[in-house]
Length: 70
Image (cartoon, rainbow, N blue to C red; front, side, top):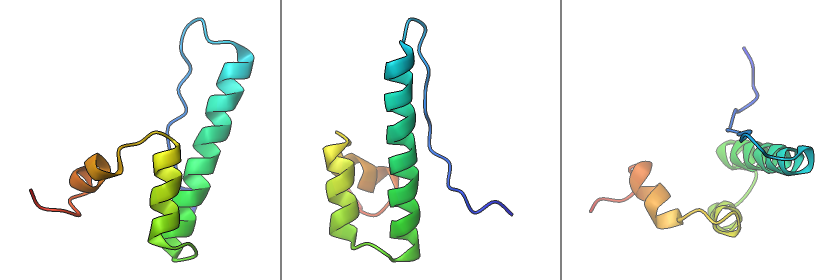
């Protein structure tokens, strides 16, 4: 079994190599932070702050993950 958690890294037509490498690095950061959170190695607030810094709407994510009821 593979213990690596996958997250998307997307290449867009016209995207430069540098832009793709930046996207790839962000994907690896998201995968590592998510894995650390799931293992209990980081506090939920740290994980949510990280997602917020990545410009994700943490409230929308909570709804998508069914963590809150509307």
